[in-house]
Length: 395
Image (cartoon, helix red, strand yellow):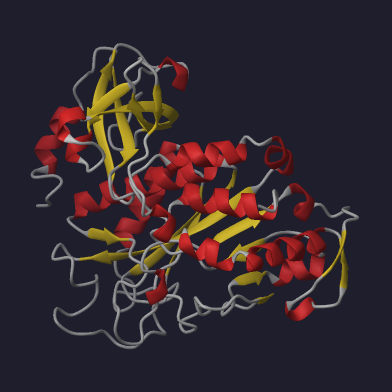
């Protein structure tokens, strides 16, 4: 028995019933903490041909921490459709933006928090702000691609004990768990496999998955995605993960340091990034680095564009840290494959740096780089837009 499915065998009987041509649309949105994902079902008379065919809906924002009780309606505007891996058939998941209705009948993107600038997650409509960045002609022309590595930790229903850990105790030290096999090393593989298959069915651009360094911890990758698409696919992948864990009566945590004491890795959301010019083997762009291991060296091509972008990121290190996730200071300590939150450095194949340039990119002279600073609970819209704004617009 699980909390999410009291009797799977009986539930299966009802799932097999015909829907008589009607379609179930599960509207999904980001709740008041910026980390909680909410959803509710709308029954449609037919499958929509596009997202534009879906109606704007509303919900009680006072129950999600996004509106006061005396003016509680928040509007849901559909922005992207995915296949529903839980109901199957023509049923769909509908990712939505949140809007505040105005007295004149118009609406504006929901903005409820003042503290989001200090830690990057909140219950406001961060997709709207990201959309403005990605619709900038200069950003659109640059064609920014993202590949996001989502680390997560699986816990027993008590929210205290990671999968595979003895209750009230600790497992053996890190070492045998990363990309491991065997019942003594790998904990939660069924959830990883179910999530992978569900994302593939849904149309999420999931690219891979692996066991992580800490026991009970896993990672999956989403991308490459261009612009706003990266945040959309990441949010839906997280929603699918929560729904899968619900069926197994397991709790998924995106906290960047789920076990704060001892020799245990944290959880990040490393963000791989490139623009068209960084990926261009024929680029003739030239740049002389001013810092880091390439300081004073004239560079050319995609690698030159990459180093220029990295130096722009370094100049705004504090601004980026501010939107890279809550409690990230617990993770970015200079240990466990991280750089200190107080410093910025980059290097080739260096997983102890803020930014890693893959060795293949260095040898080819073009490709992408990895920003290793974002926490596992980061807002993907805030992070992807901030990277584009800094590296492309130089703002």
